[in-house]
Structure formats: structure tokens, C-alpha cells
Length: 367
Ligand code: TYM
Image (tube, rainbow, N blue to C red; front, side, top):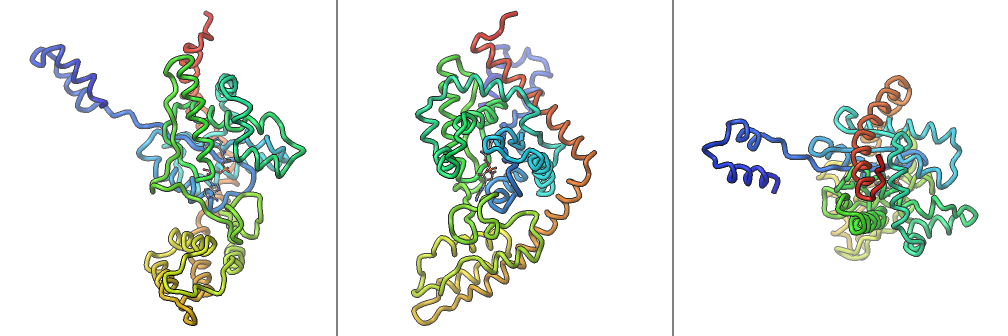
């Protein structure tokens, strides 16, 4: 109820005695926009999962919310990347975000390591995070399985750093794909513990998608989620050329087709429909869906080859302008430098306000 304090002020002051200014303030005072934050690790080329799980929402949210979007380069260090490559990737992620429609004038688009306030909040939150819960995190267990020789403390406390990223701007909406749900739940836990111990400072953040369900785009070979580093031939990158897009989609996993009317769709076929609904005309997707549902034993109407050909053409048309615009921006280093500096300034202004409140709440202010 954002107007309540104003209304109370008016009632207390007796309406006939108040000056005109107070009325205008009450009527025209802009409602505070909710704070939105999200980030992407620069661990490789961005793909359709990143786009449809996250970036598409960023672009839709930028007019209605107070938005902070960043490149999570500290998080990338947990897996020990080649740091020369990392530098290129950071620039590419910034360029690809803008190519997808983010306007750096409307949002704060910044690099995590340019905001040292995040590291201080990470330190405070680490005191409220427990080894047992960190070890149970699904992403941690997966990283340990894949890389048993590199189980470093940064990897273990990855969700704490992610919570600091979010809470440093007191964000309440976090547009992410389904794979980040557990990290968001942990961020809420850390915020609640902080508030309980030191006083109410940090609002609780929630994962956000415009449709009710969070998005999960699968790999084209049907084995798990599309990801930056695993099976590159089954991943559609925003930097792929038309030929690679066609080749990858034509190789996508299908089968002999449904053997009954209204058959249950296997995950890998549903994924092709998901992609088609995202990039093709609505009636195109509907036609293939109708064909799928009308197929029956000995009469398979849907032709996956035709569907993939259509999807490949529509996907190539969708990716081409993003690829070209991103390459232009990435080659324009002075422009990139200006955007990165501007983003850092905006992000630090907000981060230092939160940190002031955090320090006061803990009692870390001595002068
Ligand atoms: P990252 O870099 O793995 O992914 C960036 C965003 O893309 C989404 N995403 C997907 N969505 C649907 N289907 C997929 N196959 C798919 N693959 C990736 C992710 O859900 C994410 O939204 N830990 C984060 C980075 C991060 C962060 C944060 C995010 C660090 N701090 C604070 C939000 C808020 C990560 O590794 O995302």
C-alpha cells in the first residue's frame, strides 16, 4: 500500500489546511520500481538456453523495473578457466546482452569484479552459511562429480556469492532459468538468517519468469539441459552461423514418430516444439503439433525431417541479427569500455547504499 503514509499524513494534517504541494506529491509521486537482478557466467558462448531462460526476460523487464544485469566473472574463476579467454568472454557476454535488446541507458549492465561491495557482503553472508547445506547443493555435487580434483572453497560457497550478487541491490525479482531455482531458495535462506540475526535489511528474492513456469531448454541430443560447455554440437549458440544452425538442428534427436493418437511426447521432441514455438510463427508450430497428435499406428503423419527443416530456417533468421550486432559491438572497444564504466558506476551507487545499511545493522561502523 504505497500511498498509505501520504494518506495518513493528510488525515493527521486536516485536509483543508494542507498546502497544494502535498496533494500533488501524493498524486504524482512515482511509485518505487521493484529491483530486478540477474547474471550470466562468462564461461563460453551464450546459447538459446541463456536467451530463453534469462535474457529474453531481461529485455522485457527493462522498462518496468529498476534493473541490474551483470557478468559473473568471479563465479567463473571457480572452475579455473584460461584467464585470457575469460577476458574475451566477458566482453562477448556484454555485447550479446546488448545485441539481444538490453539498453545500457535503461539498466545497469556491469561486471561483477567492478563492484567490490559484493565481496564484502559475501564475507558477511559466509558466516551465515553452513558447510552441510552447501555440500548438498545440486550444482556443487555435479561440479565435484565432473572435476573431483578441483573442489575449492569458492566452488563450495558459490551460492553464497550468488546471494550476495542479488542482495547487494536488495533485488526481489531474479529472472533465471529452472536450473537456478535452488540457488534462489538458498539466497532467501541467507537473507532470512541475516534479518533474524541483525534486523530487517534484506528483502527476499524470488526467481522470475513471465510465464508461470521457469524455462529449461534441453540439449538437441536429448541429454540434459543445453549448456555452454557440454556437447557443443547439440547446443545452439547466439554466435552460430546459418550453416552450423542448420546442421545442428537436422541432427537433433528424433525417433520413428508417435504410434498412437495424442501420444505422450518424449522430452527431446517436446524440446523441438518448445524451440519452434519460440522462433516460428504460431500456426507453423500448431500445424506440426496437430500432425503429431493425429498420427496413429501405421499412420505417422508428422514428418520430423520437414519439421526440423522449418525450425532450422526460422532459427537461422532469429539468430542472424543477434550474431551480427554482437560482433559489431564486440569489435567496438571504446563503446564497450564506456558501457562497462557506466554500468559499474550505477551498480556501485546502489551496492554501497545497501552495504551501509548492512554495516549499521551488524554494528560494523566505528566512527
Ligand atoms: P549461467 O551462466 O549458467 O546461465 C545464465 C542464465 O541462463 C539460464 N540458463 C538456462 N535457462 C533455460 N534452459 C537452459 N538450458 C539454460 N542454461 C542456462 C540460467 O538459468 C541463468 O539464468 N549461477 C548463475 C550466474 C549467477 C546469477 C547470479 C544468476 C551468478 N550470480 C545472481 C542470477 C542472480 C549461472 O551460472 O548462470
